[in-house]
Length: 506
Image (tube, rainbow, N blue to C red; front, side, top):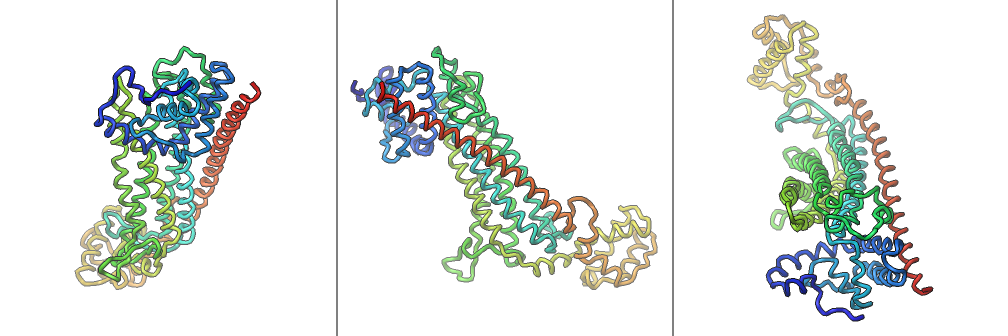
């Protein structure tokens, strides 16, 4: 049976489409279809296998249909003749198959199915693979962050609040702050997985189908954990899994941007704390001395864009009443979001792994501007039984007087502290210069920390060990999930080939 000349579903009911609709709706959708070629073909294969196994399609038609779909799958999309006038993958596939095996076979593919559940099924495959890819790259970055934390657990540096010297910390402790966030990102990726990895096939347009399709079988063939039960939900009318996944990516990007932003500031000459590898930097077309940290700047820029991702998807999806076309425009975002997230993770991992940390410069700055005075206030409470607020006032006056006298923390005088004690708290402070300067020493500050999770190097290393163990557990989860889904897909393709070969025996 020969194929019909047109490739449009609308031809019989509506006639030809206008050029402006084709240019503004169909053609812009083709790049997304190219990106989803594999996912659509796997969806089609699973549906065709199920139709054949259940007897909805007789064996000879099922085998012939699978033969055509496998030829498409094996091509990987190479040379696939996308029709510029029709952006729907369904129409593209039916037209391709009809040209090779006739309308009778090509037209059977959509039995018991709609573009709604077909597209939703393909999108779920894409998103689940994206979550796995992002989890893999996040784990890779986490390895690099934890390695730096171990090496620099006692690398003294200033800690900042409001971009002002706050209290001494270590570069390792700062890295563990980032590692804690990335560990939560991995948890969020894992938590989103079971809500993404469900099969939409069988929902049809919205009300299900009169054909006795086996929804559990298509879910099994595609490696899903179950089905989206409600047919309208499955058909694509409630796609909050996209919103959730985008939210997870947005939070991850925010954490990446925060790390890149800190390193970017510390990369400046005024700080001079860190330096990216030469291969991750660029220079100026006119200023030959420049070393611009391009890898960090790229991550910062993408993280800034990611702040609007969730709002953009929500705007497309939150107000749907009687149409599902808005969802297609939300889908358009996903490829760019996935690309940006993976790029940012790879750039961040490379930057952290090859980062040069200037320990001496960090240590020099750590105690340069009174960042240890909170410890001095604590000591006044301990030694003289002052309320902390009173001790805070005493030290505040002491710092003001020392600055007025042009003194640094290494040059302070105990007499000035005693004077501040009399003026602000009516307390006699008997401390000598050497003892006072020891209390203000930045490295001594690290050793004085007693709480779990503090900047004390032993706490940093303990936290690193804890998150390293969690990273191994995340890795086992990823390996198990990836192996199961890959095994399912191999099984689907093998079963498709088996049924396609059976045509020879019919």
